Image (tube, rainbow, N blue to C red; front, side, top):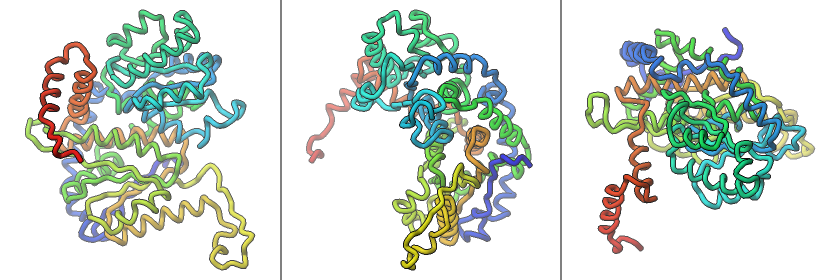
Length: 464
């Protein structure tokens, strides 16, 4: 077995462990043909989906441009939203020093990285207070070039750049990651002579972390992106296995699906490692946007979708676990555990005369967080709460790429189990259309009139 395998353990969802709220062997056995058919369906559409082939891409263009940026920039700012921001943030958090941007330049592996990830005016304006525009490169990420938040950020920072370096200097400070052939951002790149990287036309935003969307920022900050892809390639081989019991993505998709049918419609991801906290954030979008659907493939109204929840061990033992242990039986828990941290952080206790502290003497933070994770898992299991565990031998580029890919495949297989399209987002599009209308975009007058009419019916009696 590969020593860097991320292991999947589902013992604690079984009814003989957690009782009536778990799954019986008979329930799993009866559902295995459904899972096998889901695997076959996803694998049969690999070429159409695009993202299953990403582990085997040539990264030379990305690495070459990243090296150019590393040579001339102290800071990289990623302007994106959703998958164009959550993935780069998760990779940076997982694989870099926890206080990477605060390190002196000689101790960093590359430029500082900032990802504003919001249209908040104060957030965006404040970024200008902490970066040197003349030593900053902006990576603008939107496949369509119409994403309102990203294009607003681009216009805002472009203006600040132009004032500092002039119109002719912009090309040295902009990298646009977008559709390879079409879209507003592609037009802007061609007009301004800006450097570009492609997002494959058939890869959606939440499945794009292993495209230039995530690989370029990672390469700029010194992460080995070929190791990320090597891990993803290993996960691809594992998740092509047609027997669901040998396929971790299929088994977890099936478990989450079956438990949803039994009323566990909330999926908590709880890493016991701060490095993995933003992976849970990335997963929230992947799971929610892919599986939350009003209609199924037959056109029936089904309103399905388990709700993903982000938690962090041990932080949320002190904010959420009381609810998890004694509240409604409506959740399934996904623990993320790390076998070996990068360091132990040993403890020395000078207060040996105080009995309540002696148990910590000679221990380490690594021992403590592992004990807390095991204790929380045990407490939830004993309380009859179904849970699974994902064990990372260590957090590195290989295991992270492996886990990204496994979650993407798990999501695709879950979409087949629910019989919905896991690759569209009509609910998000509705919000985008309303935003365009409210901002006065041409072609959205009718929708704006509908919104204004609805506002006219607003009852001020219900405002206190």
